[in-house]
Image 1 (cartoon, helix red, strand yellow):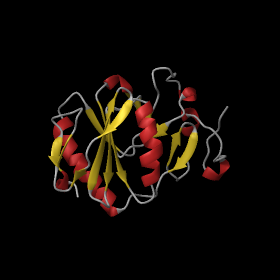
Image 2 (cartoon, helix red, strand yellow):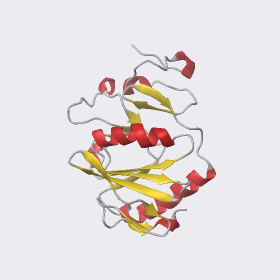
Image 3 (tube, one colour):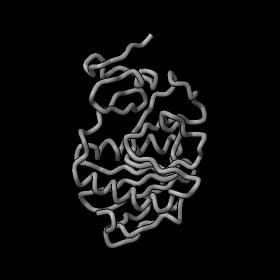
Image 4 (spheres, helix red, strand yellow):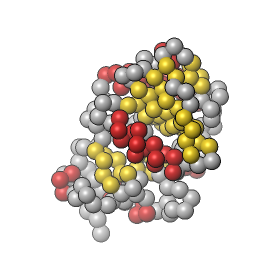
Length: 197
């Protein structure tokens, strides 16, 4: 039987863990689980990250606040499971905290967050998390069927959008500060990119 862990140093950072383990962690560090492996999250986001997150939230909320889809912002646990996996806590090995996500299937939402793939995930790239978002999370979101994935680059002031087609992400032309971004999955979601930077 697992026990409550109050110090991250009590864990084997090379070990493999489940969501059931994750629920017992009470240390101050924020972590995500990628296929059972612990990944430390960056410390509190910087001011630019926070401003962009708030601006994105405002734009998305205009579209989703009175729809059947729900918008969630970090920290919010998303337990990724595909149709072949069990939804039992002991069988879930991936828990992420996207900056923003939109979920249209209310059956995926429970008191602890989301179980299954959101329809849209947005990650804001920070200096410490760029490689993780661009590589590991890209693959995780693709494998688990996230319909649309946005990477927001605060430094270059651009949005990179990937749309799932036949199980693979197709990258669209980057949306720069001078352009309008429009979701493929949610055509009603569109705004000027310079509104968020």
